[in-house]
Length: 199
Image (cartoon, rainbow, N blue to C red; front, side, top):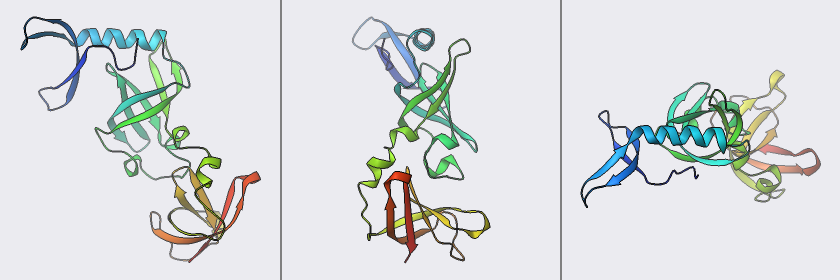
């Protein structure tokens, strides 16, 4: 059984939401017998028998809350993507990354098959530190996004990519979400750290 269940079609419901149906029978070129219940039954079987931790699946963003994103991964089965599992760079709201109706790939982080409870993660699909750092060289001047001010004004974390963050010396009047230019002063692979200087 595949995640994109065989013979599924998508139509708009009464409240203008996309709903999945399974084609049960085709009567004529213009008439088909559809079943929404069959989709749910097939999805539950898929969750219980085939879905495993670490699998990568496709999903549609259904709801966004301050703590995370609810993503339908097929047949009405919805998983929760916690905000801390969206990216290495800390964000204040999931809406900075996703929007309702967006189609994305996610990884299964945890699954309770008895309760059909699924937790998802996204940051593992954004590349490792080693993969992301290949795009940068010491001495480069690049743009980043201010993400967090370290406690006691020791520094400011700047997002270079969603899964790559560097630390710059503290500077007054820096605001969360501000786009800044930084110079890559030092890359320390053994510690997975990037030291930055504001331009």
